[in-house]
Length: 273
Image (cartoon, rainbow, N blue to C red; front, side, top):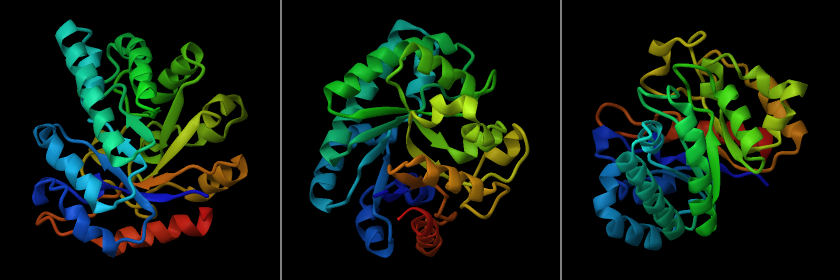
């Protein structure tokens, strides 16, 4: 049965110091089945404190979202940055193992450089996948937004080069590139067969409208996405994996709107649980 997860990125932000210890007090107020733990570089120097916390907090964390800039570092193709990216990925895997996670979500390309040097990113996948497998983890590549081409182009290239690759499909990112409906197209069966995780978020803008992408992540129902065909497709596909809600729930003071998140959890449970 599918589990409905909440991203810790929806709970922890700059206003509350991205303090992972807050998860212990927030968890009893949330009706989700577990969490997708978003890793920040600022946590690296607190690795032991973080892993000790994860060991005693009793949280269900089946998914880890790797530090977003790993893909950015890989894109440059420079030896020092590539070494840093792989070292960071190893550390992320170590945290994932301490959390009892099963799966990793990775932005294989990201930042301002995005997919400008995509061959460097595609080539690096093999080393990343090997590291993940050595740690008993499933690596999934997210359909991250692009500033040169589009996510589908790069996911297709990955699937052709690495037939075992698995993806995380983010509804907001797909809608930004007008590629949400492409998931349902018969000619893209290769994509649906490889989706191992879903991020369910809304989007209020038009095609590649960058200003509407930045800022708060919207909960389903607060943007322009029609989720009915998506949910119908996922049900009919036989998918039984997890879903993560990433809608921003903290305000400028750091207070978290757990009622909104619980409403999103119940929405997804009505469809998939």
